[in-house]
Length: 252
Image 1 (cartoon, helix red, strand yellow):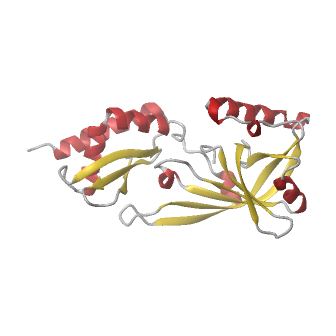
Image 2 (cartoon, one colour; image 1 turned 180 degrees about the vertical axis):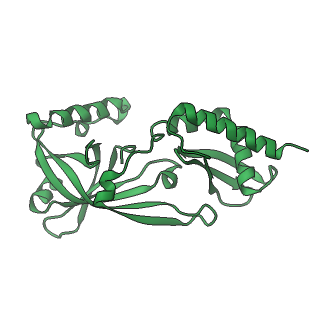
Image 3 (cartoon, one colour; image 1 turned 120 degrees about the vertical axis):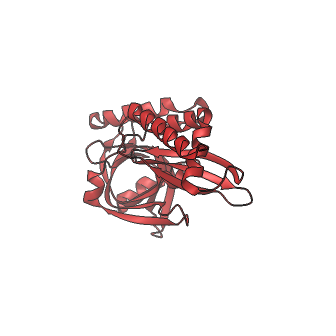
């Protein structure tokens, strides 16, 4: 939720009661972990929330690492925090402005900022559905249901914001290690391997997507010997794993 600052926000249409979805950017409340969303005061979403605060937010990262990071649907009720012009929402205005400034110029729009007459809501999460890769052998996905208390107590993985940089760096500079990890984990030979790339890294391990000639791509996970909490420790563990796999595969 903290890693991907946008998603599909669904409210209940006032006339039919069916879900009405729009793309939104959001902030994360530091205390509760709940998303904070801005809604134009004259929008369909605002009219829907006035009648019924029930809503959901579907969050999914883009790119090839989607299944590794997981997809999340948050369900709950929108609580009104005030209007964009209120002093109470000044921190929200600043937060959205910071997100907008980080976007490429061609992707910025009027909708990215909190304006005086916008309504600001916090999504109080009752339940979260988390879909992630369950088995690297069958590529089966699983859905975990997270209750309100567990969601509030959840913490962002310490490598969440380091991972994109490290994945890009290792794919560019350490492809031999990634190939070695793949053959070590899967038992396939170098001659059978068409491609391999690092997808994602978290504090407990990493994901690699590989493809054998004539087959569909598959994902495989390599666990770390201990939990990793920062970039320095991550580099150390990856270097150690590279050495261990090289030693295991070098000719006798």
